Image (cartoon, rainbow, N blue to C red; front, side, top):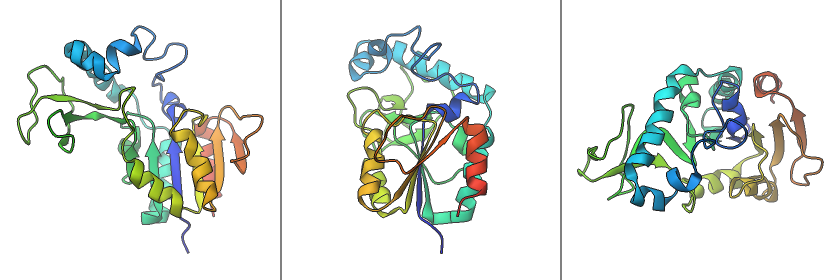
Length: 229
């Protein structure tokens, strides 16, 4: 019988493909204030600046390739099928380019735009968004499909349902201290799931996590998948 598994990935898995994280030294916001490019107010005040920032990030994605950790998760998905769900905090498309199919981008997706008139209208987009870009469904104005500060992450109901039913919750490349994602491990554990952490840095104490595996994602994730039962 296949085990139901929910995986959460964070910036650490993309960093090993050379993508800068949003936070930290040499982060994506090192030369931009969060308030200028990642809030609803910024989009109202200066939509061109906001769109140009995400255009820049989108344009740079093809230079970065999926790594061994991304590929290992594809292998696990192929083994588990519908019993597998991948939730990512990352806005890049490395999981999809590796071959992952069951992916939820809780913080949005750089490779999509969203209609400002109808949030259910979202569509794939690979070019440069301008002030003249229109929604192909209704002709409304568009915005990056990115969850800004002050906004609620996407797919929360689906994620909670999956966490409630899973037998193991695994978080990879994230310290899992920023909410709401930080609450996933305790929520899953409350419903009986085993909780596993694969990360470069391991906390000294975490009552919600059963297994800690320390190391680079490209090294520990393939090994963990290989031994997964």
